[in-house]
Length: 483
Image 1 (tube, rainbow, N blue to C red):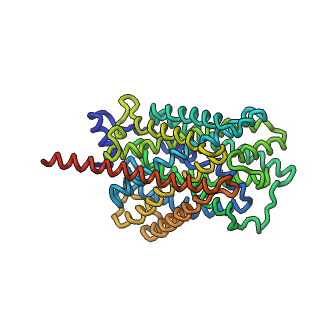
Image 2: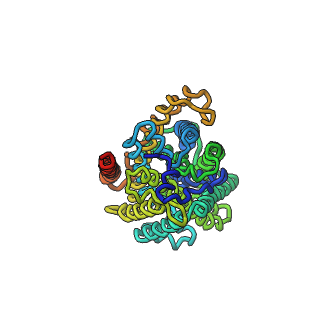
Image 3: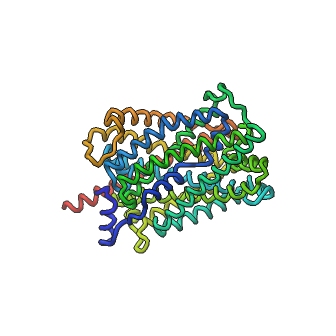
């Protein structure tokens, strides 16, 4: 069984051409921006107050930097399609690799509906005050989520040479609304002063429930650089493109988070900021104060584009992950097939889309729009942190293997990598625990906790059962062939 997807895929398709290298370095930069940046996290951070700015910087050092160096080194060591799955498999074997890949894939089943809920809430600001009557409408949010999911799925099915334009548009739809918010916020500040009081004491992170939950959100907000490695065989010169893209996009992403959070705080006091609509509320308030109400619908439209583009970026990456597992025969053989015309892992992509659609509907069980959104966010964070723990563990273990001239390492080599890997692992583990804490304003904390922890354990159990079935099937075939 080979983890080199391109080779196996070609064989599986009877010698047909494999995956196509269509993404350049600028495409990867745009991909990272749209895959990593979540403008909704800006509002979540701003709701805590000025200390969020310090927490952003701590998150940058504690997770962004370790993750960036780990991905750069591992993707240059082992540039095969499949990324995290390939690295974990090399370090720990088949089952940990499959489970890491499975949990990473299932992360998107809850991430997609949460992102689409945010996009649906932002879309209401396009149509003015009368549209806000839908802000608590379950049918509206479910319908809008399914439409956005369908758009992303179709564009990714026809290939990355088409789908990458959705990612690029999503990147533009991510930073322009933040740019408009920053401009409006600072103009309003220059004319009327700040809506938030900034003091030395207010900048110190606290230990209240909202502060603890934010630590987990900040860590999750900096995740995503590992995603492009799942598509290594569709990137031109991946050993050069991925490190460059991480460096360039990293500066852009950090600036977006810091400036965006500051702008929200200038426009609104923290108590008026909500995670679902906060960034658009701040834009609307600041734009209205400076006499530029046109900014609000423009920013809302672009935010929706950014959300759908972000969904498309993650759909593309996770589809390649299940494709790699399908090639290795732990998932059904169909997952390892390429579409005969578009050369995309269509079965993996469609399965992902159907699963996300189910979670978009089932997430509403027993709760309202906000309750469903909070549960989806928490479960997404936990299921994401599990494979990232595996990534950092693999980064530490694989330091024992010799590094060739083509490997891009952190300054200081193995010693620095060990420190970075340990820091990233510890940050991820702590963030995973904190993600289990329900928000302070949760209507039913017990139900929220049961949903998050129970749902995560169920996904682990399902993945383990699928692996065991695939393993037994593989052993039976090996035994039959040896007779």
